[in-house]
Length: 174
Image 1 (cartoon, rainbow, N blue to C red):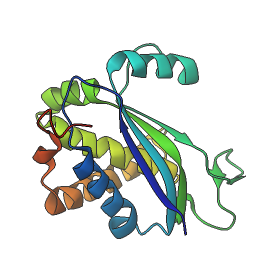
Image 2 (image 1 turned 90 degrees about the vertical axis):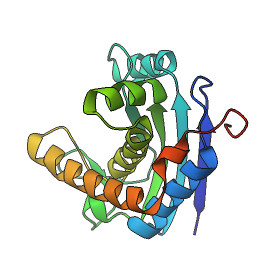
Image 3 (image 1 turned 90 degrees about the horizontal axis):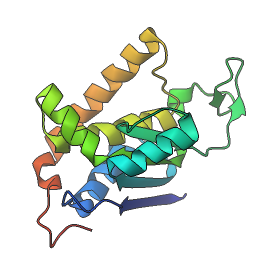
Image 4 (image 1 turned 45 degrees about the vertical axis):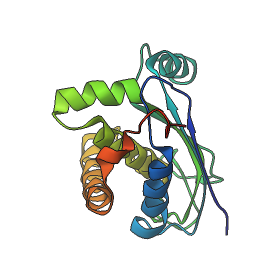
């Protein structure tokens, strides 16, 4: 049973408590979602790096909040999505991928949605993990379903952890 979790802070503008983010993510993966195994890298970046990733891999201009890369060995379904044989996508018990999160966008969207950037950051981790489990947000019905699950998990994470403490003093930031 592989449980590899890498969290890399590649931005230096916003001090982050990556130890707490690791605890939150591990709890999300094991306790709240119940994954049996995972191989996951989470990279916290600034807007210029996210814009380069967005242009290179998605052919979109500008920064975005979160980009997820799924490296799982899934078989193609009839819809073209990749799923484990015989399982609905959201029943996957293993995820393998990378999630890139733009801290600048978390701050901007926190102001827009009148929440904290720390809560937005947790939301982006959850959003990326849901994509790795096979949730999709391209069609309105699927997007609503994914958003409901995202909100449910964020509420549980917020109940279990002090999200405001994701903001670290410069000494604690990694």
